[in-house]
Length: 292
Image (tube, rainbow, N blue to C red; front, side, top):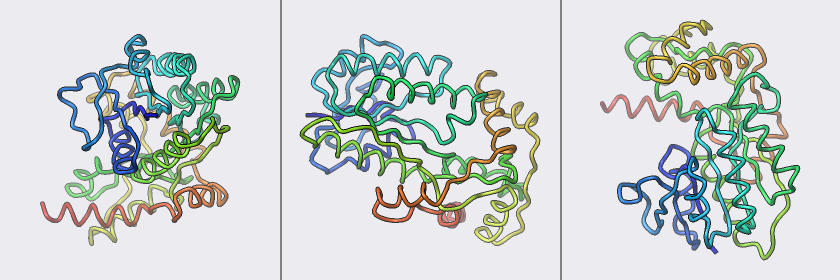
């Protein structure tokens, strides 16, 4: 009985491994470079790449439970569907799939629509899976350090409808809980869905106010200009990826991505506590930045 974690060296995969550590499970981490991977003690690196399906087949040998995180790449949908196919063929009894909050609603956002299609496959084939749907990651806003400190501005064009951002530590903990439940169960468990969300509906102006309190200085909201954001993203990312993100922020502005009380209660029950707040994150980040 063993758990295979994909995306193991990334932001979320690292959190999943951290929360699995010391829980008595055999943990394997899929990585392209086993010799270079920095992993928690007790985690076994396994060579593989979701873009190389034969390597995934080999990595799934002896695996009972799979954490499936597919990176935001141009062929994300193909990688996810083929990995689920070979996992099913390998007899994997439990899957935890990282989807996205509002995947069904945001039909024009490629990485949302792709994840929703994967959810449809899981449902259609009645795969024994937990689907986790995280909202925008709170820790993405660590990238706001320079705009906040140098220009006194919160620069992500979140808009005014509200987004229930989630702390990545809550994502990792929720995934670990469900992986262990499925791995330790005597038989495959039916499908479960969790919206991974924070307790607050956050707007651009509201986030600026939170940062004003955390930093002890006036912070303004940088506004809703999506064209500027896309151009800025193109300096760091491929053009298709920058447009994908622009479309996502556009839907945040027009529709929002706000959790219901039932969503929050369901996650609270899973975690055994309330999800972490953005304000607590901002306070901690400000303290760290003050240390230099």
